[in-house]
Image 1: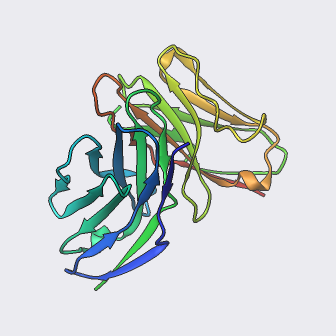
Image 2: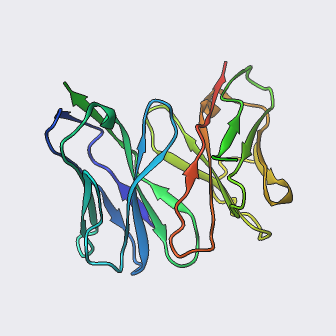
Length: 115
Length: 115
């Protein structure tokens, strides 16, 4: 069975600085997708970025980028120029491809942004 | 609708009572998920519906939990004889499975407190 591990329960970053959130996963599959979701206090989960395992190029979305290391089964999220609105819980998620559409989530990292 | 809608947003119930949580997915989305998020924890998969296929119930924690999806749209998660450990946020999500990358969209959740 697949597992997703986020080893940092909480992180802090100074406004305008850069922070990296870690995520590792375990799978025997070769094709899958990885996601980072943000959950602000409103509780609604918001997709931040996604990565297809067959793509070697790391995904980027404005200030958000990932460092995808397939061999190491690592998928970290880098947030550049951190803003106060980035403060939230961040969840790493895994989904098989093809087959089951079940998403496996990590336990989350709470990000605090300091003014 | 524009997004995944869940009701009630908050529910306080007495131990032993039954509760029903409702989810209205995004129109046209064929897949629907229920997840549970306990305080400070990650997302725990409960059940997954895909079109007319038999649901994946592998995450339901006990036979007190059941879910149905009527007409391929609205879903109801029922918890019978609630226990205090059932207190959590219940998140519903939906996705369209007609494309290769199936991003899921979450509702804001139903916060259940069992007293």
